[in-house]
Image (cartoon, rainbow, N blue to C red; front, side, top):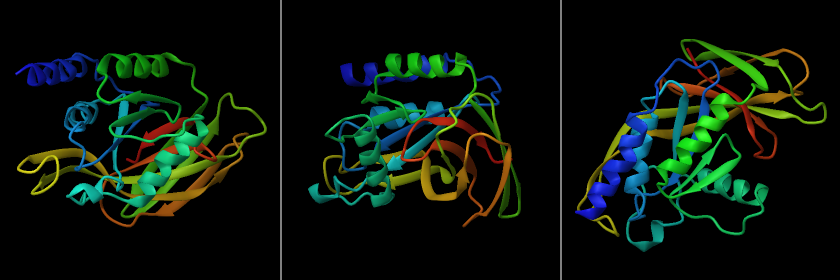
Length: 233
């Protein structure tokens, strides 16, 4: 009973958050796994993040818990590599689930909603560093990136992420055996459309691999900070 009450409290914090329109939403990446018994509370938070206009929530399922009895159907070794890259960038020696990374910079352990909300609010009120917009015609995406205030000695990856808004799984083995779980904003595809010098306005184009919704992230090369993000419209 105590566990379910705590989970409800976590979710309530995000239900209370303002869902206002946002030109530069904050990106929250959740590293999670169907083989992780501690992950469902964080997965529920992702459901609430997915409803917000001022946040882009992305669930990246990792594969390193597959050995304990259940292979995560949405896991991708590339997601594990991305999490490891964040750990190296932040000087950490371990990776774990559930972990949330905010704008490629700070990480939050587990489902700590108060800390997560504090970080999201800080990024929402910070001065913008760059702007990106993206439009879609069929599976072709056109992107425009404009600098605002960026250092002159960095390069940035123009990343396109496609995701499924909702996926359901019936877990039959492992620590969560017997549970039917819904997952929000499950990342399905990730590509780099190009690299940007961060100094001059520039346009990029790319072809999407499916009809799934997409977002664009402008991230310092080498898994550094995400300086701008947008939903593809």
